[in-house]
Length: 145
Image (spheres, rainbow, N blue to C red):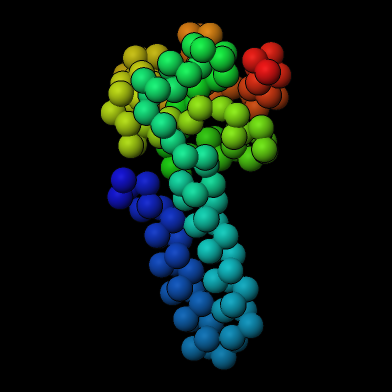
């Protein structure tokens, strides 16, 4: 759980240092703007942007029942963030499995990717797809609806 917050914490720490240096140089306005930018970046790379993750076994069971995709992801992954942002509100219809919180989910991803934890890995109808185009995932959501 802790490593999911490592990158956002580093962004906040760096932002604080940069803002403090701007204040020391007599630029409080620049400090506020820079700190806001770092806070925004930290928020984007935090687990808060993604819907509540569920265990891999539950996601597989639910996906088998309704046909919705399962996305295996991890915090800090730029490609996962890109997929989540491009799915927009439809992203809440997908089953999200955080491989850093769920060892079974990490094992699924490693089995699919030759031992690597390459994410996002999207599973639709028991077929894995590594880093698919977000438009393709939206299309799969339309089919399952």
